[in-house]
Length: 306
Image 1 (cartoon, one colour):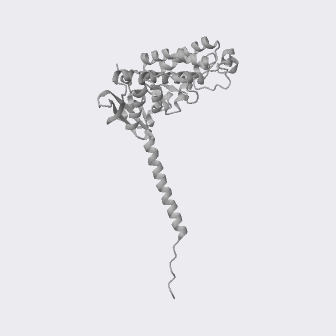
Image 2 (cartoon, rainbow, N blue to C red; image 1 turned 30 degrees about the vertical axis):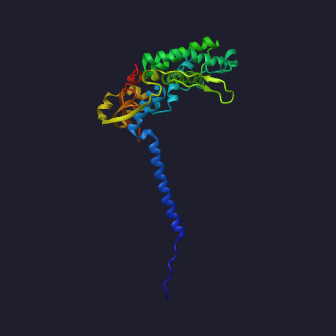
Image 3 (cartoon, rainbow, N blue to C red; image 1 turned 90 degrees about the vertical axis):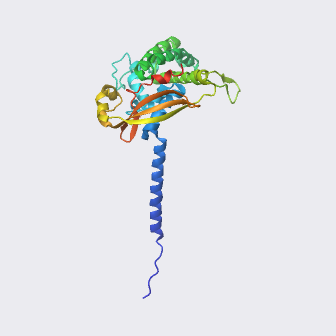
């Protein structure tokens, strides 16, 4: 009897090829995701945290890399502990409690005529009036004491808005609109600005200005942040000293922390001159790393240019 010729199993080959490709793509996605997602890399996380502050004085957005953003989105954290107490200040509001049965100042019934008819002019005036106070708070407290910055700013904002609009209407959108505009303007005061014109009308929207950094380091200055040293910190000793009360507001328990490191980040000018350095404490929870903002002192990053 003749041997049967062995045929090529195309179905099996297709299955094997599909699995191989799937595994390859899966590994590629994981590696790409890890490379892009700084939370997987303690050195890059620490560097990004410092760089965010150094480049534009933006301690606000830097907090998105910290434990404060672990339990929820950072904006939700601000709403819960600082905005909602102002919105519901004359009710039986409790932090973290249900607000469905409460009527806060975000209710449409509190909108006065100026609020209803504002075309953005009064909102712009409010933002301008708040800027000097924002700068004062950053200089007085720094972003390590964000609680004082938020509580003081919101108290001043509700007062100033009532003067401008003539009513007590207040929402989280009002806060974020004014506050984030102030953060941006503060950054411009450091970096300087260029002439900007509307693409359609040619109308000049902003003028060129010289920033604090340009005055100190030249118009074409450039800062580079480099993670220079990494040291392992005793996790047990760290946990003993941790501020568990603040951690609770972040939805974090020290039991969740598996590793702790201290990363020294240096800030250099383009010619290699070191202008500042900071030891950043980072902790690992699950697969991700977070900056512990409760023990990382960022004050030096706001005055190195003086």
